[in-house]
Amino acid sequence: MNAPAGTLTLRRMTAADIDAVHALDERSFTNPWPRKSFEFELNENEASRQWVAELDGALAGVIVVWLLGDEAHIATIAVQPEWRGRGIAARLLCVALQALAAEGAVTAALEVRAGNEAALRLYRKFGFVEVGRRKGYYQDNGEDALLMDLTGLEPARLAELCPEAVR
Image (cartoon, rainbow, N blue to C red; front, side):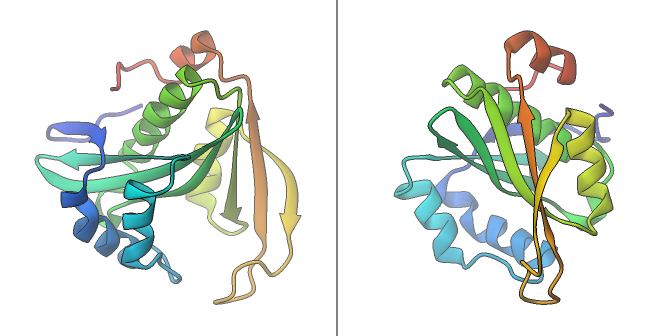
């Protein structure tokens, strides 16, 4: 995975990040989460794990993942539009999958817009496969959601997918 120019730092999300994370979500999605949803994820949802990526100190991306039994469910992932295509989403996905595997996750799951080619390329690179479809899932345009699963979150497999040391 190509590292972006500048210093990329991955760390757990804090309350101080919520405004910037919410602004990123609004820039990234036609149906963004309300600010209070990020507060809930950080402060109340015991299943939730969240990380941010900073590029030279500026918020570059975010991922929220839920640990549901032995499944890591990717709830949301976003990267600043001007920094997409630089491997930031892959690094966020790596850190989340590695952390949740260490907590006992053996599979991962997500929903993605059927037309989101960039996201589909990333997920397929990681080995996610389509296992279903929700017709007309997205209310803004009636687009389908693809349901994707990844099995085999063993440390050796994740080390192969995520060769860079990410923390």
